[in-house]
Image (cartoon, rainbow, N blue to C red; front, side):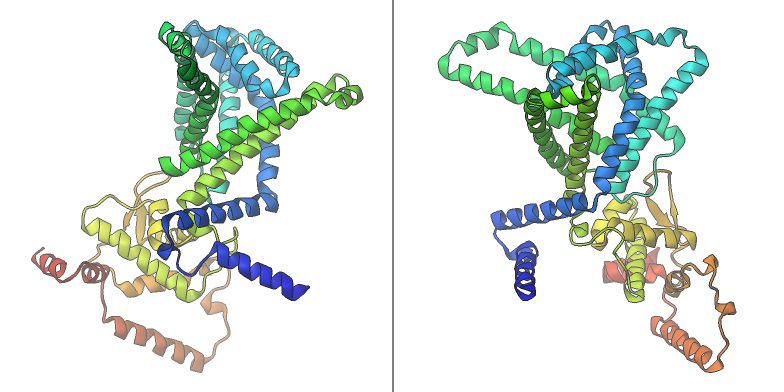
Length: 454
């Protein structure tokens, strides 16, 4: 039985990771990539972190929903479209059926009771802080999926979060209004009277909600992680999550209609329980969508579990030299400085492994980050005077300051002499080459000649 399971496992791995994906036809390569991403997303789901973070976001949403809607209501009121808030909530909670309308009315009632204008500076500050805390919690969940350890700086959070909170509702309700006006126009009405074209218009009308949700999810996937997310992967994740969310809404609505037993058991609490379950399902779908976007943009993470990218000293040294080479090459050519996600794809290494390498190089003052957040990296020293040997020394010294230091180890002259001889041999083999020498060697003979002229 065990041998049969191992054979099935080997066959599955062969299907997921064929020997040469690039030699496969286009459709086979596409199916292989879909299977690989699906495998990675299911693996992350089964590990349980996504469900834990979805449950955490449910709790945070319950605490911050009314303050968030209060700010949104204030913005919409300034433009005279505050009456659209309740219909939008009813549409969002349509999966709860009649209970969704009741919850929407109660939430709007709470929002109406909050008078933003009379809260005072302290009350308004607490309101804004609550909303920013909600978005920061969401960002941390997205950063976890994207293997990002650093969140946005505090000032950047307030500026970017508040801009989205203030402008986002206007764009959403403007899009909804334009869509409704377009579908009710006389031209569309005339087209709908034609039998075949009427069927097309009706189909488009049914697809519009899916399209709006996909666009909204795609924007969230691009904006929330503290890294540069490409439109293509975000759109793929948004499409899958948007379709899943609309489909889950239909399925959940059917479940609510047939959940008379829950109402009998929980009485008045049934509405709250259903609302919390729907929030959990929604957050879980949203997190699964960003996981899809992450693996589409970073396929190097598909085959590796989180926190299991153990590097040998040889790989650490090679990745460090490669990172310094590419950073120095872009700097020498006056090209745009590398950001971590771009450099990780160039190195063919997972994002968190690349981050560890860059953190070590930065701690040893070999590179510097040119800004906060997700910064570009450039050499911190003159490339003409930075020996390549110093790069190896930097990554070999590692975390000695954390406790175990060479001078605290046992003394043995024979071992010390052998290590010194190996170190001198490496130095001799590199012939005191600098980072600029390595960059010019990679650029070719013409670049070497130009470098001499400089």
